[in-house]
Image 1 (cartoon, rainbow, N blue to C red):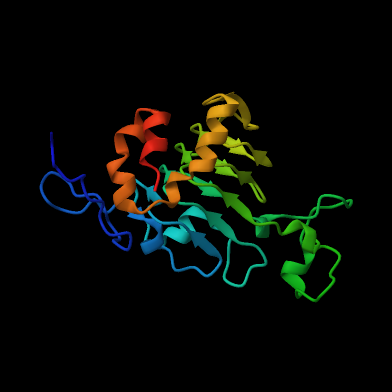
Image 2: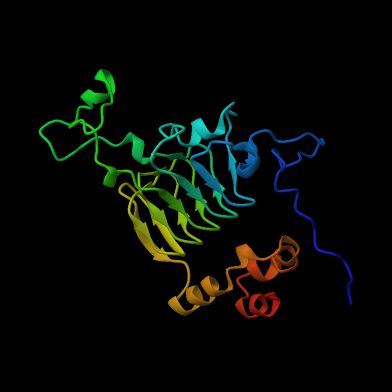
Length: 222
């Protein structure tokens, strides 16, 4: 009978949580909760992003249209994995599409309240990413998208609207290609919500989580 303790995760406030074989920090991977201070972001614990061309400003790289004081927010859950080249095109990038022109005249001539060329308040929906979502290289998440837990978004996908939990999405426009698990399993995983467990309990349950052993995961629940 082994008494070995489970491996420990690095602190969630560590900027560069990956250590290379030579002992140096891999600066191209960051815990977003440590790297992002932008007030319009809401980032869950242990979600990370990676980039080959390391930016000085991770918030600007990932969400270039989300400015301080914007009417919308970008909300990313816990344990999300964001690959190189991903961008969140948030609602402040929107133009009106219901008139004869989409040109934003007000941007260049004073933002006065009620200007006809500005989108209405209904256009500024938050973009919401659930927990344990993997977003592949070069994907684009469009304004107001709401992505469920456990979703996998393929490389280069362009995602809009509602995406159900544990879907696999690919293509442009992004479509649900398949569900990762059957509906009963998804309901049990959503009820377990392992991403909210204490980190030591999650690490102890690593094998159950990553081997899709639902019975073991339910036994491990706090």
